Length: 425
Ligand code: ADP
Image (tube, rainbow, N blue to C red; front, side):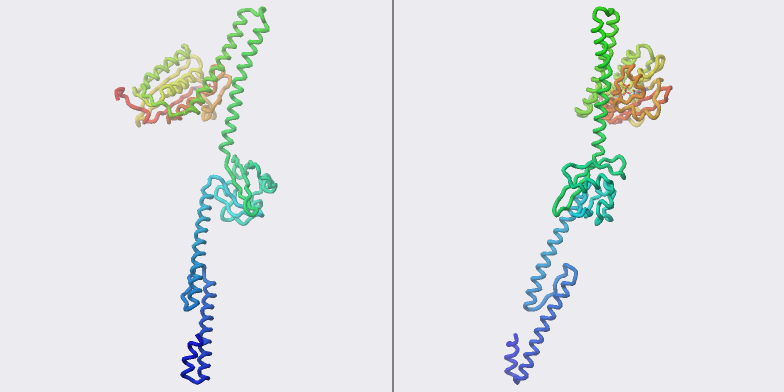
């Protein structure tokens, strides 16, 4: 470059002038390098992603190369941050709680569920050691003990009744991922299952003890026991065997409703006929001890399982007889309502149910008066079966009762199950 300037100009001017021009040229070149260098330094201080300006000569190569690398780096950064956002969104959407801890157990990130499970704030709490915020001793001990082979059952004090399973997973550079899973529902189901098994065992144990007691007495008595007395013992044993049989039948019915559970067969049947039949069965059960009134106010047909609905309606009617003292009245009413739905109601003038018991009578083995239920051959499962059948038919059970005056159990059938009053359609 110097030569390019110096030689032709040197030919035209004196040697001193030539040197002067060469020096100026050199200075110009130096100034240009310096100028480009300054622009480069200024660029490094600008926000990431700012493109480099154009330059001349060799600097243009350098600048465009740097530009290309900066663009690649920026694209990579955008891709990484998109991936990170997606990963966080996925962690956020998880039904389980997720919390990341550093090697010093400082919170790095938490999703909303973990914040709820541990009582934390996902915005404010990252950066704080987790044991400064979650201070329950059992959790602190589990985290510090460092043995994470088994999950840890955790009951957070700030969420009454909640049961969590917490699992710590180590990863990377001694960092930890803490997963919390809400198992309250599972625990409730497990308690129900345990209670159910205990109830069934208890219900069977009593009659079984009575039956074996009577058999022992008859066997021990041998020929000395009078025939009439033996018959009496055997009769009582038979009663108890019948009780066990009823219980097992009800258990099987309940289990069939709970487990097989394909949607109920869609028979279309005459409800009036079904209600009258239940009326006759109720009279037979009462054996003249009650006045049984049957009122079919609307003749219509209904879609559903005739067998299941018969068993549910009959159960309500038999309860009315069993819980109404002699001389009382049991009324069965079937009617279609204005909005097209229909109701089957059983009203009695019996012992009634105190308000605190009403919401619980459909629970399995729930009885207001255990003795009375047994005396009348109850298993404590009748209304649980009724409830299952009605749920399967999208029907509702409404109970109103006044102790000492009587009860009214109404089944509300949705309009779409009430087919038509015309048997031909
Ligand atoms: P159970 O075999 O004991 O009758 P159910 O499930 O049919 O069992 O009923 C549960 C409890 O609800 C009964 O034990 C009884 O206390 C109460 N109950 C049900 N129907 C009536 C009624 N019509 N009048 C008074 N109490 C009733």
